[in-house]
Length: 512
Image 1 (cartoon, rainbow, N blue to C red):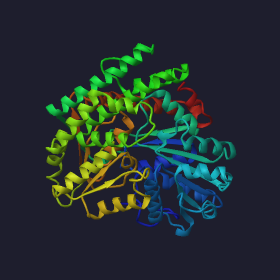
Image 2: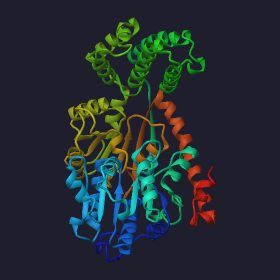
Image 3: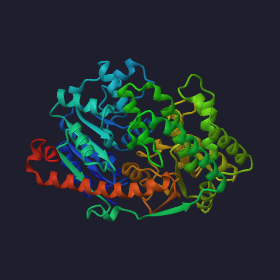
């Protein structure tokens, strides 16, 4: 193995890969978006751009931003390991730091932070944008709407137009308009796109096998769902009778259509319809939980609802005869051990893991994390969990980092994680990834899949419950994955073809 040789890179720490050096060179010359599959070294590329900037502008500093504290901490640890400067000049900023301490850290040579911290400190006057030569936006697909990346990029471009911006992501959205917005927001002049078939990266790509496992709901679960849908029908009829646009409502009402209905209600001042609408939204969520997660998650949701006071539509929901009957059947079914068929399948998938093999199980709900953690532990499997910080039951940044360290050290070999584990989770030895539930987003699918198959062949197992949102998402994500690849390839072609892209944003304009 050959290593990168640079005055600011520690000797024999960073593997030399020609495609990374080529991409970094382009990033140093132009504001660039790097679209590269997980495990192929986006962080290494950001380091190469960083040392180039530090060498060119020794009096200026570099910033790397990432969406979560855990990911920021991983960048910080990576820089400590590979960047050959005084470690006291590498800062890791969190919200726990007092203002005076954060101001001192913003004066360091290299700063790692979340975008929320940086945006807040810009407002407080703690950050001098003119002194920064580079900002790296990790998980740059988030640069949409009011996300902090957007504000930071705009202010940075206004104050320091000659400085460099680098966006990094494993996948851009399938929606071409969203891609255009992201590139325009970050002031991107060049796109560096590679996939698993690209000639210069192919030799570094490990095979990842994806197995889809179908399961079917048991009769008790089908009975509960039938009652919930009858209860939902009452409120949908009330919304129709209230004169809402009937295109919103079909045989199966989705959360998306109900949220569209909410906008219609708010825009027309139809506040008398809020009660049936909010009740319908809660029931759709309950149905989704039962279909994709199981009885325990469904019961916990209703227990939390019943403990609340003065919530619009809650009294009607709790007095609905179909809902009450469904809830009682669910409680009885749980007492006799009835659960979602995914749980037994999950055990079958995880039990063959060898002592030194690791797995990550992704689920969209904290209730499922708790349920799976408890059941798998009871069966003698070595399990940990990773969840976000929000709420009373969330994990602090320290606890999240500790969970990842415990997985790496082998304290447990199975990690149950919510969405917080999808972006940038650095577990190179992961052999298996399980989608306990499916996602419709191509970006999230790529992120989940990318947790395995980094340094060795990996395997993905995705559960699909027949006739539910799981199955719908299966088809949606397949379509969006194709669209995402096509969109990024088109964008990349436009940038490569447009010579003006080297001097202006005309390549971005070509996307309109």
